[in-house]
Length: 353
Image (cartoon, rainbow, N blue to C red):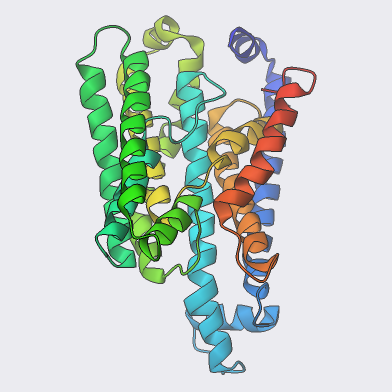
C-alpha cells in the first residue's frame, strides 16, 4: 500500500502519459478480444452454424434480411446460444468488477465477491426453492432475494457492533455466511436424494446450462444498477489508496464512498450468483491479471477487469459445453483454472500480488 501511494505521487508527466497510452491500448485490445470471443462462441457447439449465418441471424433481429438459414439454425443461435453467451459475458463482467471494487476499497488482495455472504445467501435461497418445487424462474428469484437478505443482515449486525465499521462488517459477513451455509447443508440433508438433491448439488456447482432470454433481462437491471455507480465513481476510488486523512482533505467522504462501493459490488454479486450459481475465482484472479496490464489506476482497472472477466467466463463456458459429451459445471472449471494460476501469482518473484 505504501508503494502504491508513492508511485501515485512521484509519477512524472511523461510516465503518466505513457501509462495512459498503454492502458488505452490494453483496453482496446481487450475489447477486440471480447468481440472476437463473442462471435466465435456462437459457432462452437454440437449443431454446426457457420459464422456467416450467425452474423446474418443476429443482424436480422435489427434489420430485415433475406433468410439463408434454416429454422434450426435460428433456434440454436437465438434461443440456446445467445442467452448463454450473454449471461456468461454479463456474469464474468460483474464478478470481476465486484472483485476489483472490493480489493480496491479494502486494500486487500484476497478480497472476493462473496466477502459479505451474498453467495451463501443465494445458495440457501436456491436450495430452498428447489426443495419447495419452484420453477427455474422461482429458483433465480429466491436466490436473488436471499442474497440481498444476507447482506442486509450483515449490515444490521455490523452497525450494532463496536469498533471499526469495516472490520465489523467483514466479521459479520463471515458469521452470517457460515449460518446460511449450515442452512444449505440442512436442506441437502432432508432433500429427496433421487430428484431434489442432485438438482441442488448441480446448482451449487455453477452452470449456465438452460439459460433463457428472460434470465438475461432479469439480471440486466440489477447488474446495471450495481455497475453504473462504480464506473462513475472509479476516479474517486483511487483517492482511498491515499489514506483516510489525505482523502478527506481532498473533499472525499470516505465512509459514504466505501459504503456505496461495497453495496454496489454486493448487488452485482447477488445478481450474478442468482442466475449462474456458485462460480468462484473470477472475482479473485481477474483483478490481479488486470493490474498487470493497466496498473492500479481504477479509471482503467475497473473497465479492464470487466472486459477480461467477460472474456474469461465466455472462454471457460465454451470449454464447459464442448470439451466432453456431458457438460462440465462451469464452477468446477473456474476452480481448476483459477486456483493453480493464483498459486503461480503468489509464488512468483517480484511480489506479484
